Amino acid sequence: MSIIETGNYEHLTPSDIEAIKAAAKERSGALLRIDAEKELMKEITTKVKEEFQIKPGDFNALAAMYHKQDVAAKKAQFENRVELFEKVFGDIEEPDEAEDE
Image 1: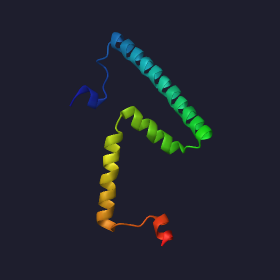
Image 2 (image 1 turned 90 degrees about the vertical axis):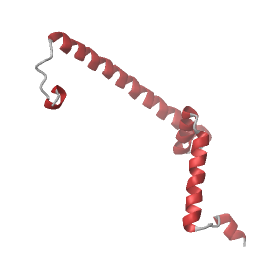
Image 3 (image 1 turned 135 degrees about the horizontal axis):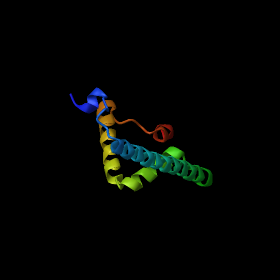
């Protein structure tokens, strides 16, 4: 069983403790920056919603696809899901098509 699994930290030296304290403070600073960035992302999404009447979920998905540059993968995934849907449930008429008949 390792020292980590036992929860026994008697082996830590004063130097170790200072290094751990510094690491915890550094990580705390990173978390603070993350919180600020999350708040900024919310503000950007709200601005887009208000100015362009785009649903937050749609804008967030758009921004995520741009960030990850994975629109082709998302499109293929969607097409695979539509193919599965059609295989299981058959072709379903779109509501507008059904009304025109």
